[in-house]
Length: 189
Image 1: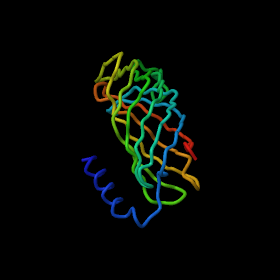
Image 2 (image 1 turned 45 degrees about the horizontal axis):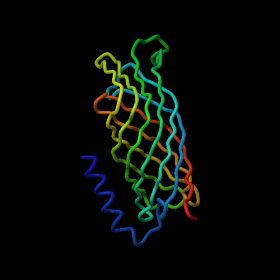
Image 3 (image 1 turned 180 degrees about the vertical axis):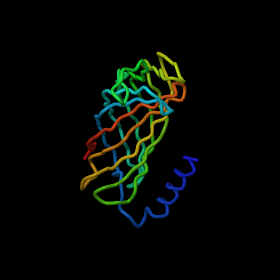
């Protein structure tokens, strides 16, 4: 279902691309971002994790509305020791991983504030734990993940990104990611 919507967005942008100016920028650039790392279960249960997130991307804007990106980053989250009510909990969700992969960004044609969506595929190397009332998984090593981001590219040149960036780990029944801000630096400009 998600891929149908992504295909519709891409086709819609193909028809409008000749008549609008949109983002991401054409050309090559490096994007760095940093933020608050978060981990949670696929299910709404006890157990979460918070921590640190940082990522660097090599991005190539194919057109002004679509770009491809390769990325490498680190996500360090620890399981919280209390639940949302402040009571102690034994349940934990954590990720301590180095991630890399590739994704595609599709952006809306709006000047100064360009909303975007990204998705792709990647791998994470590290340790993961999902311990909730219905799940008890702990793995070390290499896991496949699906990156997904929703955000805004803001500014006159759309050089600042504000995004919710997440990695879905199907084998861990876990979602890890961040609320992050980043900056784009053009290459060869």
